[in-house]
Image 1 (cartoon, rainbow, N blue to C red):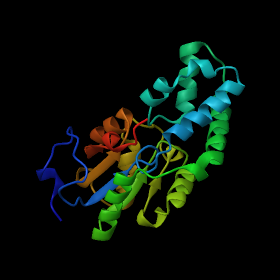
Image 2: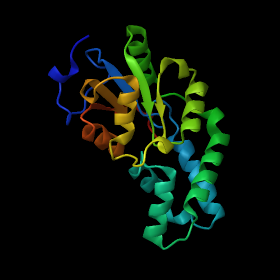
Image 3: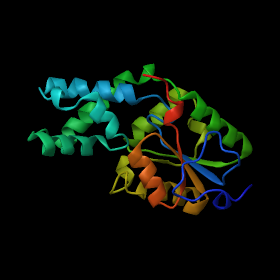
Image 4: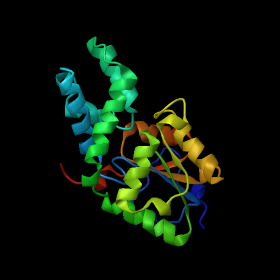
Amino acid sequence: MSEPSTLSGPDEHLPLPLPFLPEAAIFDCDGTLADTMPLHFRAFREILDAAGAGHVFPEEQFYAWGGVTAAEIVARLNAQHGLALPVEETAHRKEEAYARLMPTLTPVAAVVEEARRFRDAGVRLAVASGGRRDLVEQTLHVLGVRDWFGPVVGAEDVRRGKPDPDVFLLAAQNLGVRPEVCVVYEDADAGLTAAHRAGMRAVDIRPYLPVR
């Protein structure tokens, strides 16, 4: 395989598809492999509306906080708007609402095709997400791609979520590879920052998302 570090520095975003095969590729899940972000927003608004707080979380804010864990989003809303939402309980209820919507999710075709190309070429693959690991696993099963990937790292596996690099560093460790030979696929600024802080190259897949 080509040595990725000779082709791009860690602060650059690479194109899709890559013109080379990396040693390992780490994919975010929500909004990257699967077009789940609209479903996550619907789930958040369902729970927040029931609590009388939906007005404080417009769609633009939700997407600006892409890659941040549900619990951290609730904590931020509490801090910014003087709310007293129970953080863990509200985050759990949101994830349960999302789970009910999961059968309707669809893939991000260009990214899934890139993962397929890597799988067929023997590239080591992992998933690193700010979401709950069991929901990430379910998402991969709905897409029919779970067996393409080795490790799946979720929010509960690290102390600090994106934009800290912990999820990507743990994924690389679980793959048995050095961070500098990994390429990360992400759809959010927090995730791209986390990849760069991990010393990895990154692909910003947002140009390949469906037009809203």
